[in-house]
Amino acid sequence: MTDTSEAVVSTDKDKMMRNAPATEGVAHGSSADAALARRMRRRGEESRFWWVVPTIYIIFLMLPIYWLINMSFKSNQEILGAFSLWPQNPTLRNYGVIFTDPSWYKGYINSIIYVVMNTAISISVALPAAYAFSRYRFLGDKHLFFWLLTNRMAPPAVFALPFFQLYSAFGLIDTHIAVALAHCLFNVPLAVWILEGFMSGVPKEIDETAYIDGYSFPRFFVKIFVPLIASGIGVAAFFCFMFSWVELLIARTLTTTDAKPIAAIMTRTVSASGMDWGVLAAAGVLTIIPGALVIWFVRNYIAKGFALGRV
Amino acid sequence: MEKTWNNKAWLMVLPVLVLVAFSAVIPLMTVVNYSVQDTFGGNQFFWAGAEWFQEMLHSDRFWAAMGRNLIFSAIILAIQIPLGIFIALNMPRKGWGVPVCLVLMALPLLIPWNVVGTIWQVFGRIDIGLLGYTLHALGFDYNYVNDPFDAWVTVIIMDVWHWTSLVVLLCYAGLVSIPDAFYQAAKIDGASRWAVFRYIQLPKMQRVLLIAVLLRFMDSFMIYTEPFVVTGGGPGNSTTFLSIDLVKMAVGQFDLGPAAAMSIIYFLIVLLLSWVFYTVMTNYDVEK
Image 1 (cartoon, rainbow over the protein chains, first blue to last red):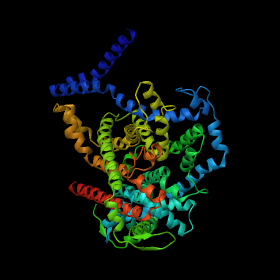
Image 2 (image 1 turned 45 degrees about the vertical axis):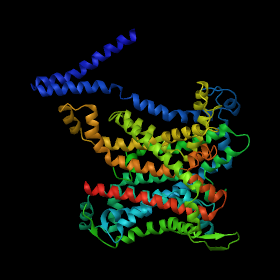
Image 3 (image 1 turned 120 degrees about the vertical axis):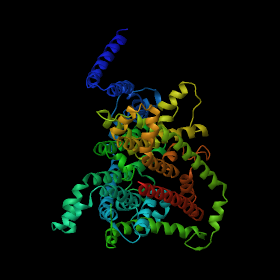
């Protein structure tokens, strides 16, 4: 009973607070203003429960992740023996296994090496190309732009086997650069599209003014243009990082031991006899962390990136 | 923006061209090469013409995988697009809730695809997974390992979990670009919530929705890793989608000819879809 009465009191207070500007509107004398204020008030009451839908959705998203985290702090006996919603005897053993065994933690280092290489390559070749697409018309430009898009849409499964043969021929199998180059298949087109979207938002007058002021093209590009689209470069780099990080099929095909990504090492453990659920969960949790860390920086641009720079 | 004609721009595009040619054109030529030849082992190949293509186009296995994939994509779109719009409409527009929602909702998009599979494989298990255990405790006969229907449900829920946020983020980006004046005008006219949605919000979301539909269709049409980890294509062949079938054929059975022919057919479909995507997008830009 006390709960409800409190709620009623607070609702009344809310209404009074919201009434204040409304009465001001009436004081100005127009009846349309008053009607508008009344409607706005009604809308305000409607949206008091705005948090319900996002909260339910976020809980749905977080439950499986929570379950993985929960498992990573349990011993195997506890995982298989008793069903519990949180670890009864929390242990760090699973993380200990990963951080002390080179065949595990090297997987993370491998993944990070080829992801960073890929991001650096993709951005550095995509920058001039995106500038060309956003500023000039040239022979075959539209066809080229379309062809780039088809590579973003190409099924990796189609490329797995030919990639293996191509990189074998060059003796690049099981090297980081092989995976980094192979991931350029979808990351370079993506980077070009995203950067082109951001560059088209920069008025052309800026280029022209810089030339009049006596800037050479390379100096203009590095000193003026790149700082202007810094957020675009950040977003493009984030998306290259992300798609290279989450891809497994090609990365697994091109590596055997020395450059094997962490995601592939995980799959090997799954098939081993006497499944080590705790270590598997801990490895999974550790693969989520890099994404969770970088996402904060691009939170406002992430939709623009997914829309290939075109929102 | 007015663009000047300048063929020297080709020099700036050249690095991209070389790199993508190396990682796309050469591998694709290898596939074409295999699709028209046959081998009895060793390194001896001879011309087979269109034989593999005919075999593929008459193979029940190919059409079954294609059918499953199309049904899967249709279900995915039917769930994710309305759900994504609904959630985006209910997201806060300002305040502390915005970054919290954006970051938490985008999180599943950043998890490696096989970890997504692992998460759901564990989550759905009836002995150690929260979902499977709860469903069993409630009396449902749920087992994604043996029952094709349960396997489908699991794979679809997993994909909804994984990718609905993409639709949400795109729609949200479209919604926040609507100026406040539109809503004020609607209020003055006494527009209902539905009218606001139908005549203000939906038209403004058209462009992002288009992107969302096409991206979701293509990505679900190429899905491989997540269902492969959860179900391995089973039970039986019930969740064997095109990519899973292709990898099985090429890497598992080493049937290079049929696999290459299938790759080409697959790729042509994707090419056609990309063309539709591109045409629709550029026409849209022109209309605007």
